[in-house]
Length: 530
Image 1: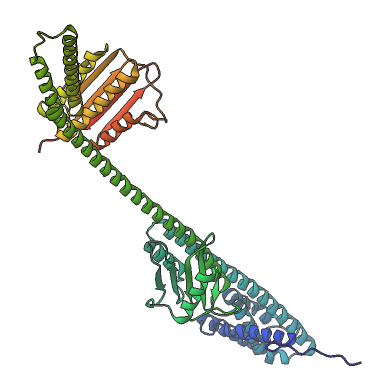
Image 2 (image 1 turned 60 degrees about the horizontal axis):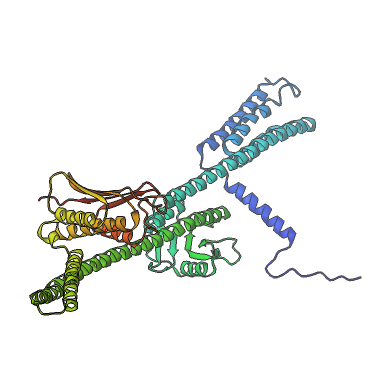
C-alpha cells in the first residue's frame, strides 16, 4: 500500500535537520567561547605539558615501580589543571583542557598493554567527567549571576523611572528623566517618547541615545511604528513575527485613552523579551505620571479660570457698589435740592396764609396740611441722610456712626451706646462709606429682627487695624455651616456686609446662638503713613 507523505511547508525544515542545526550551533558557540586570549588558559595547558614530561621522565627512570604500581599517578595529577580550568572558565575551559591532556598522554598510553590502556582511559574518563560536571556547574552559576545582574539592572532602571516620574510635574523634565532611565548605558540604544496633542497642549517628541549623540528626528521605521502604536494603542515591532526585533514601540495608555508612545532602537543587537518587558513596565509608570501631569495641568487651568472669574466678580461688585453709592448720593442731593426745597416753599406759603375770616373747617384743613408737610419734610430729610449722610462727608466716620446710634435710640426703646477707643483718625472716603454701610445694615437688622433691649457699638483704633463691634442681647440666630463665617442662609443683609468687607480687604466674624444674642466684629486695615 502506498501512502502519501506531506511535503514540508515552504520555509520549514525537517525535525532532524533542525536538531542537527541546533547541535552544530551549540558546538560552534562552545568553540567560540574557548578562552584563547586569556593567559591563564595557556598557563594551564603548559602545566599539562610539564606533568606529561615529568611522567615520561619518571617512567624512563623506572621510579613508578612497574606497570601496576604508580602508572596512574600522572593521570590523577591531571585532575588538578582540568578542575582549575573548569572553575576558571567553565565547560569552555574544562573540555579543551581534558582533550589536550588526553592528546599529550596518547604516546605514553600506547606503550602499555591493553589492560593498562583500559585502566588509563577509565581514569581519563573520570577526570573528564569531573571537569565537565564542575564546568557545567560553574556555567550555570555564572549564568545565574548574569541573570541576577540583569534583573538588578532592570530593577534599577525601573526604580530610576519611578524616581523620574515622581520627582516633578514638569512634563519635559519627567520625559527626559524617563528616557535616561530607559537607556541601557552598556549598549548603543536610541530611545524616544512622543505625547499626543491635548486641549491647550501641543504634542512633543523627545529623543535621547546612549554611547552616541541622539538624532534630530526619527527615521522612517521609528516614525511608522510610533504612529501605529499611537493609533492602535498596542505594542509594535519592526519584525512582523517579533522574533528578532531591533525597534520596539509601546503605547502609553491611561484607561481607554492613548497618551502617546515610548520606543527604543538597538541597531547593533536584538532587543530581547526581557528588554521588551522592562519597556512595557516603564510605559505603565510613565502613563500614570502623564495622566497625573495632564490632570494637574487641567486642574491648574480650571483654578486659574476660577480665580480670574472671582477677580472679575469682585471687580463687578466693587463697581456696582460704587455705582450704587453714586446713585444714592445723586438721589440724596436731588431730594434735598429739589423735593425738599419745594416742600419747604409750599409749607412757608401755607404758613403765610392768614386763617382770619376762614371757617373753622377751613382752618382745620390748613393746619392739617401744614402738619402733613412738616412730617413729609422730616421724612425726606431722614431719607436724604439715610441715602448719603452729609455728616460722613463733612465730619467723618465716627460722627456718622454716632448719628446712626442717636437715630436708633430716638425712634426705638432700645438702650443703645457707642464707645470709641484708641487715637481717632480718618480713613479714605471709600473705606469710611463701606464701614458706615456695614454698621448701618447691622443696626437695621437689630431693629427689625433681633428683639433686643440693649445694643453696644464699639470702635477700636488699635495699631494698624480698626475693629468695629456691634453687640446685642436679642434672640440670636442659628448660623448655617460649621463656621460662623458662613453666611449661607443669613439673609441678603449679611451677604451685603460680607461683600463690602471683601472690598475693604478686612474680615467679618458673626457669632450668634439662639437666645444668646448676636455679635458682629468687623476688622479692617488702617492706612499707613508713608
